[in-house]
Image (tube, rainbow, N blue to C red; front, side, top):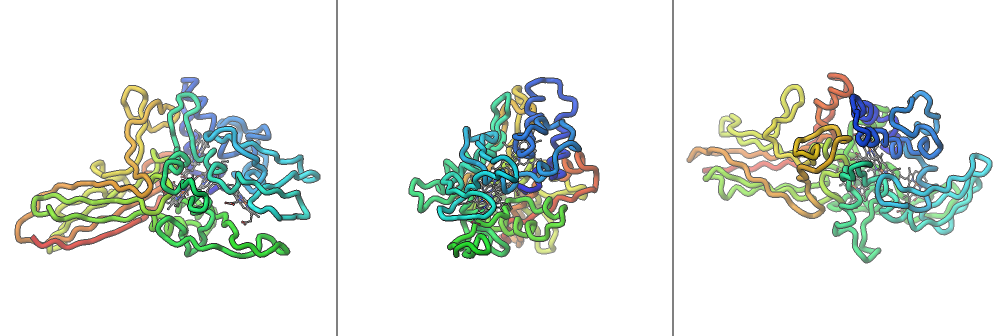
Length: 390
Ligand code: HEC
Ligand code: HEC
Ligand code: HEC
Ligand code: HEC
């Protein structure tokens, strides 16, 4: 996703769409700020500096998103939001500068190398993974802040689990979340380099199982699904079923930040709850998508909703002056959801509860990319089923 940050069709479409029809200068300022993170090499080297700059004129190197040289030229961060990275990139091929990373003893024939504590800390990720509205200050993404307050940010550095500790250990078949093992990945970082006890993997997989595949990648979509399926646990309390009530508990057991995190006004994580009788007739259901992929309005959904400052919800984040709703689950915490229905005495029911995720609502993708162009997959993160005899 880092390499695709500039080309990601969902990003390209959304960033163009948000700017349409804006007249307020504060809203325009936010809409024009995307390139700072999505085309960072271009931004620091002078083009593009605004989202609306001509994409055709962007230098080839800058179209490659957040790339090797960008991260490995960082020396620190000025602030923990809106990309405050400080860079020392050198001066082109003849003077490539110092590349910084986690080893004290790395040597290269191509560039100087130096140890950088900063690269071993969550802060190198946090400066981009905290996004605030440039004019109103509204918190739009807070992944780093969520981690900072989490139990994974232990004062004892040996016990601390950084962003890298989950996201740069994952490899195919090894989801590396808080609820799974996170085994080391020994090997050599370069052909004639020394043996290392762990090589940091650079898949940088989150929840996005759709976009890498659009670029022919066959591995990362599957890894995103494995990650999501090791993020949460579900439990079901049916002790009050005869009174027409039951409670579902959703626990964030795997993520080092809120579940979900990132741009959670767009991401959707919700509960699909279905009760059926002996004849398999559905007597109660909430949280299902219709044939167009639109989620029913009664769904329990874990997301954020922004407002215009007067209490009205807005879907265009450039207009986000306030947070109206933030229903997400902090690390190792649970959310309890109660459902009501009308049971009939003497009957036997099957209850199915699914926790589901998709990176964007289908109707949004249809609107910005064109109807039927891209189908956003719905991932079942967890599923439990129980039979209740009344
Ligand atoms: C988003 C930032 C980012 C990008 C992009 C990135 N790296 Fe890294 N890289 C890191 C961090 C952070 C570490 C060290 C992690 C730690 O110590 O916790 C690292 C570690 C390394 C190491 C040390 C050896 C190892 O594998 O552990 C090498 C070599 C390396 N990166 C090369 C690359 C190359 C080549 C690319 C491009 C294909 C790249 N990196 C892209 C952030 C990045
Ligand atoms: C304890 C393990 C763990 C740590 C630590 C951790 N993550 Fe995650 N991360 C996960 C899991 C599991 C998921 C998948 C569930 C989800 O999407 O939230 C995830 C998902 C993500 C996503 C995708 C969110 C989405 O749905 O769009 C991003 C971005 C991300 N992490 C960034 C970070 C950053 C930045 C840090 C450090 C500040 C970090 N993570 C620390 C486990 C971790
Ligand atoms: C220069 C800014 C920048 C830095 C530094 C950075 N990221 Fe990201 N990251 C992004 C952007 C932008 C995206 C989303 C690209 C897209 O979706 O088009 C992203 C995407 C991701 C995703 C995939 C999210 C998904 O929905 O699947 C993960 C995981 C992630 N970053 C983790 C990290 C970690 C861990 C670090 C630190 C080692 C880090 N990032 C450093 C900007 C950054
Ligand atoms: C401070 C850095 C930063 C800035 C500025 C920024 N983004 Fe992002 N963007 C991110 C990160 C980090 C992610 C990944 C979070 C996740 O996966 O949940 C992301 C992900 C996205 C995605 C999700 C793409 C997908 O495939 O699901 C969209 C869309 C997006 N950004 C649009 C924008 C727009 C539009 C702007 C400007 C108004 C913008 N971003 C400005 C950091 C930034």
